[in-house]
Image (tube, rainbow, N blue to C red; front, side, top):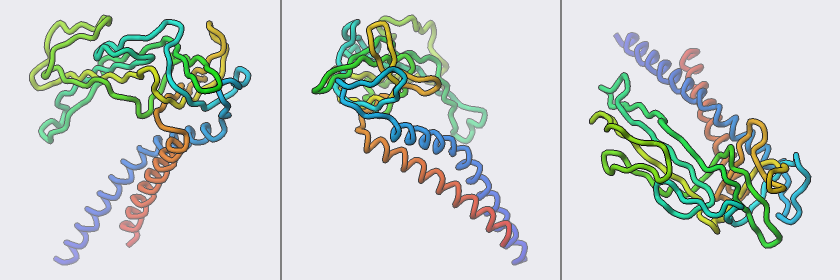
Length: 244
């Protein structure tokens, strides 16, 4: 009887360790992404804005956001004046295993501004082309669920013709960068319609962050460390439970 209980406990431990290994293993892509971003941040040039290098050069620069050639934009949901915005509409409804309280989150709609904005420091300025952008710690200027407030975004074609079912919920989110916000921008120098710009390069998005470079690099290191450590521990426990 005791051997049976020990065997059942060992099997349960093996299953839990295997599940943890699979979950943390699937998260290793975040560690890989963080490693890639950290490497490119460390390799990129960091010039003052008056000394932007030749096109094709990868740079990480910082300065204050300002309006571009098209002037200030209006954020669709909050209506605030900004130089860049992104909106998302998410549907939240019960999933296949709803009896366990699990919900399925689906992105229904996403849109972000593409108008160039200016980055300015004490030495000069440069245009940033946000056509393909990844945001980091950007201000969340609007978040509301459809069950709390009926609304449509200003100046968009997204129209709600009917309410979703009572067991589901739409959430509207918006991020916007106000003029004067201190930003760090990581991208590649290129020639654009208005002259020299910093934009996305290939598959790498233009990174816009409100964190200074040292804090952003530390965040990538922490992601790498935590993810790889969790995977190594889970795998070690699983192997130990199999061999013990």
